[in-house]
Length: 246
Image (cartoon, rainbow, N blue to C red):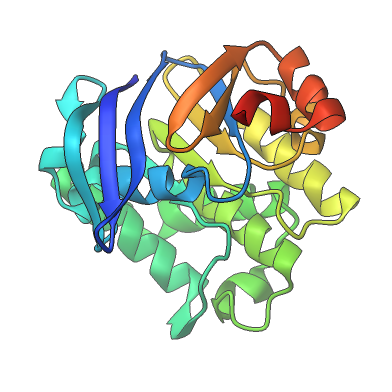
């Protein structure tokens, strides 16, 4: 599904990723953990095509397509979804308008028929209920006045509606209390499918108690220095990154 080979990237002329290689198969969930400044968020922004993040070497393909050759909106239409650590507010644009516009824009780029109003409302009601968001909240401007947990739930609704091939979730567990964490984790598990893969970026093992990944990777100084199974998260929680980063 996602193939990253020897990826190098800079931000403001400073090298952040220094030869990162990662392969995520169809239907797999992988997690990346690492100390602050390791390049975890930079990786997510590079994959999404955020301005200011310059790729200086390497390759990235999504389902066989050259991801780096695409603009940000083209990457989204190709099936990439980025869940932000700090979801932004969009005053004046309702969640319903935002999501229907995004969904139909992607469908047009894929040559698919747009969702009718009735089809969209049926879909959004199912997903909103699954993540504990009321229709009143969906009618409000995107994330405006939402708590941290509500913003993350809203983002999960967005992911469910857009149904990406590859979801990159950058510290989705950040700022969540235990109840919100369980709702978000249950949603991620509900969306697992043979044709959909997920990359979880997290500092903490607690999310991985609920979303058990196929593989865990440790990112240090812009490179993956160790990989393992779910037990690796418990080791990192116990011992930290000092020995690995040394």
